[in-house]
Image (cartoon, rainbow, N blue to C red; front, top):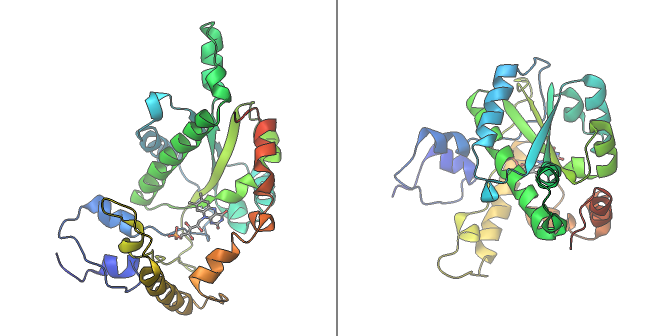
Amino acid sequence: MTTHHPLYETRYGGVDQTVPEITTTLIDQLLTHRSVRAFRPDPVSDAQLGAMIAAAQSAASSSNLQVWSVVAVRDQATRDQLAEFAGNQVHVRKAPLQLVWLADLSRLAHIAAAEARPSEALDYTEMFLVGVIDAALAAQNAVAAAESMGLSTVYIGGMRNRPEDVARVLNLPPKTFAVFGMCVGHEDEARPASVKPRLPQSAVLHHERYSTDQAAAIADYNAAMARFYEAQQMDVKGTWAVHSAKRVAGPASLSGRDRLVEALKQRGFALK
Ligand SMILES: Cc1cc2nc3c(=O)[nH]c(=O)nc-3n(C[C@H](O)[C@H](O)[C@H](O)COP(=O)(O)O)c2cc1C
C-alpha cells in the first residue's frame, strides 16, 4: 500500500486515503470522471454514439431481460423542450446530444402478448426497479465509454421533473419511464470542470457489518468540499452536510418529483 497518488488525492480532495498498489488504465480513467456542463457545439458522431450504446448493452442485465431503452435526441427544438422540462438547464439546450435513458417494460409486455402469455408481474414495483437498475447500469457504461473517447457527459435527473411532458414529446409508450437524461458532447475547454471529491472510503465501505460510526469521515469530507468550493470560487452556503440535508428537507426540495408515484401510475406502472 502507498499513501500518495495524484488521482487519489484529487478524488478524495486531499483527505488521507490508503492507495492500493494495483491500478489499471480503466480505473485511472474512472478516477478522473467529471460531470461537464459547458459544451462546444461540435456534434457527437454516429460512430461515437454506436460505441457508447454497445458499451451500454454490455452491462449486466437482470435475467438478461434488458428492460431499458434510450432515446438519442439531436434536434435543437426537442433539446430546448427537454431543457425546459428539466428545470431550464442550459447545458441540456447546449449539448449536441441528449440521451434519455428509459426503464422500458413495454418491449417485454409486447413480447409476452405476442407469445400469448400473461405478464402480470410487470405490474409490480420489483419490475419497475429492475428497469431502473438496468437503465442505470447501461448508462454508466456509456459514460465510461464516452469519457474513454474524449467526450464528456452529465446526467440529468431533472428529466424526472415532468415525466408526462417528456413522455409526450419523445412519444414514449406506456410502461416506459425516463429515468434520467444525459448530456453528451465535447467539453468547452474555456470552462473546464474539475474532479469533485468523494466521501472517504471509510464512510461507504463497511467490512462484514454496517458501521454507523461515520462522523469523522463526514467531518473530513466537509473540510475537503470546503477546499473544493473555495478552489472553484463557488459560493456555497454551509458545509456539504448542510447543503445535502437541505436537498431532503421536504417535498418542496424534490423539484416536482414528490408526485412521482402518481406520474408513474399514469405511465402504466401499477407499482403493486
Ligand atoms: C442520476 C443523476 C442525476 C443527475 N442530475 C443532474 C442534473 O439534473 N443536472 C446537473 O447539472 N447534474 C446532474 N447530475 C450530476 C451530479 O450533480 C454530479 O454527478 C455530482 O455533483 C458529482 O459530480 P461529478 O459527477 O462531477 O463527480 C446528476 C447525477 C446523477 C448520477
